[in-house]
Figure (cartoon, rainbow, N blue to C red):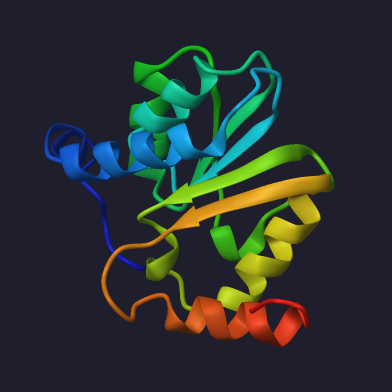
Length: 151
């Protein structure tokens, strides 16, 4: 998605996204030592929440420089990097790749899925949630095309 995000406004009005993310995190069953990548971290509050549930490295990435600046100024523990989800630059670094209410904004889902695959350590897992009926169809079609056993 192009355009400018207003990080402070998002932080004040993103309670629904926070609720969805926390529900999803509970389902992951973190053991407390995972390294985690949060794609589309926005204002950083969920990345920070993840860092409170593991002693492993936690990194949040977002395309928006405004969101990353806000997250860096607000939270001390997780790392935050301005990065396009379609151009992830990680190699076998994370046990979990997490994304909530963000990936439906990208246009090249194949690039995102390949980047996630490369970012994961062997036996790592991707936990991805997108809202809105039908807006993740392209993500699922891409998964089916690159993962033959995906059903």
